[in-house]
Image (cartoon, rainbow, N blue to C red; front, side, top):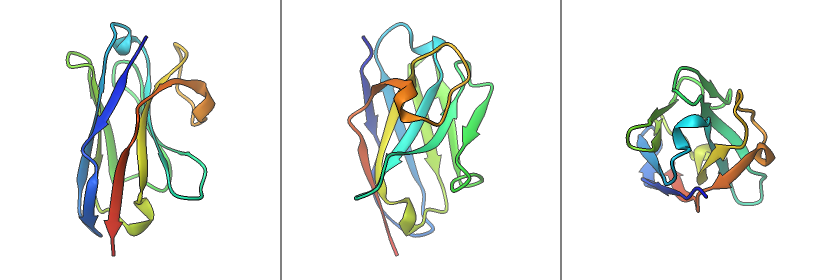
Length: 125
């Protein structure tokens, strides 16, 4: 069993920055890729970023590339999402998720088997 708890969301002005954290329980955290997704009201959940089990490879949605950075600290069982140059269209609930397989992560939510409760990010214009 894995539990994921996100933190760090909030309200920020356009152009500002936020840093999200996702703390994981369970000894298998360091074996799996992790991902961040977001869901805005009335929209489907969408892929934001993912990171391989050892942090050696990262993957980003085109919409956040160059602005967001995903990282992880396996000693702390934590994955991070640093978000810079935020825009109103980044407003959403952000979720971290554990990839279900021991392979390269995908962008598909159904391929992730454990999810956090989400943290709200609101960017004002």
